[in-house]
Length: 302
Image (cartoon, rainbow, N blue to C red):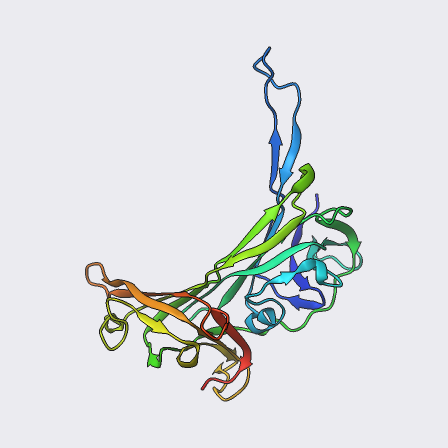
């Protein structure tokens, strides 16, 4: 019996620390009974859409290699690599004992960014894996030496949030759903998809907070408010050992956005507890053809 633990993800040559990895082969086996019996006489794997999902806390590093436009894995020299560390009685086994999974074709896209107050932000990705016509969609190599890694010391939490020049305080959580729709095609009866393309991108921002005054005519009125890149900033602060890096250091993360914000839930509360207010913003490309959401890694807070 072999036991393995998470080690790292490499997007080409950039390593990302991971807090979760999920790999799905996505197979469909068809077995249909014939007219003469209740039993099938034949079964076969007829379709499969492999996918890889992972979460990373290294927000700036990850956005530097894969942001809203996604990544064509086939254009990467080394592909997308998953490293799995083999375990023994002393922890991680020494030497060439480990497993390497390599993906050389498909599309990598960000799915969601989540951050709650006093927690670390997490960025989730999905790779929709395709078949290049020759190689296995996921190549397995055992007996490998683990690669060296950068320090896993990139941690971020909630920073200041301004929508259309209005500061929103008392934020309990921020979620960015990047809203990327990936279409796959399996022509010529290939089992695996031969093509994966981004067809739609409709991001959505969601805030939860404790201040019901987010919902008013001078903030977000009942008929919503248009927001613009020029006047909208959502920051994640980078942590250091004493709290957070100074605002003026170019180590934080900024998002700007354009779209329409509204308050779907002005106020909800139970007995003897503080209420909550929800804010959502559906984002769109603006008149200058700027992306709906623009991330800026490694920036100062201003």
